[in-house]
Length: 297
Image 1 (cartoon, helix red, strand yellow):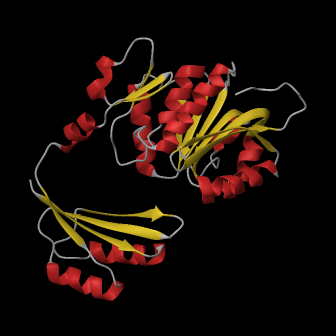
Image 2 (spheres, rainbow, N blue to C red):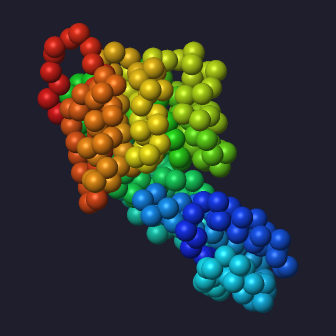
Image 3 (tube, rainbow, N blue to C red):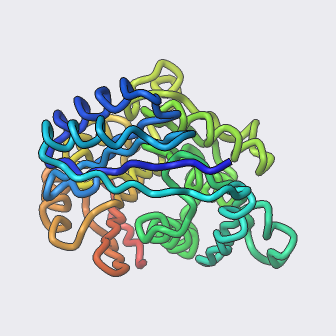
């Protein structure tokens, strides 16, 4: 079946939301509409509509005039997209892990830790630098013989970090995401990796869930999101972090790293390692404690 997409760039979230709702009312109606932030610095948002038949060009022209935007219309040929995406997502290697779809699962070396993740409508296939940096941080913590037994993955997406940490450290892992699709996807991936008894996923804004409150404090907390929400989460992370425990903060651009680090330092965290990949930075920080034992990463 041939389908069509109509995509426009909008300068702010409010207009993107209104445009998305207007797009839903077109005739023929789109099969799905999505809005998401393209760049938190510029504030640009993308609005996308997907149609099972060619969209009405006159109606799109009216929306363009009303919102001062330009739609890019694309004809999408028929294809088995699930198989294509799984095939195109080549395995990602970040010691000691290999992240792959089921298409490549049989080719993973036995001496590596397999993280099986299928492509889905949620953030996280292991290919993005922010995820790679977090996986690298996990490997670094393992090399200093840090063995967290209580782990939290805030904004878990498809659950890659929860799966990787659970397989490596064999601790109790709690994952949360505010997005329903992410929660559903993470649960499927966790079951596919045989971790249904080790990793629990909850729909929650960060730590705001009864079951998460019963589990805290955490030895290790992942927050692979963006700099702005990381700054807002400093106090919730502090309340849920065990003294002497580690946090891994990612989704930070180089120009944002010093400010994020300073905010967490002022709230009781010491940076023990900053790792970079392209324009992205990951901070490994330790909750201040009385022990003077140093961890050399």
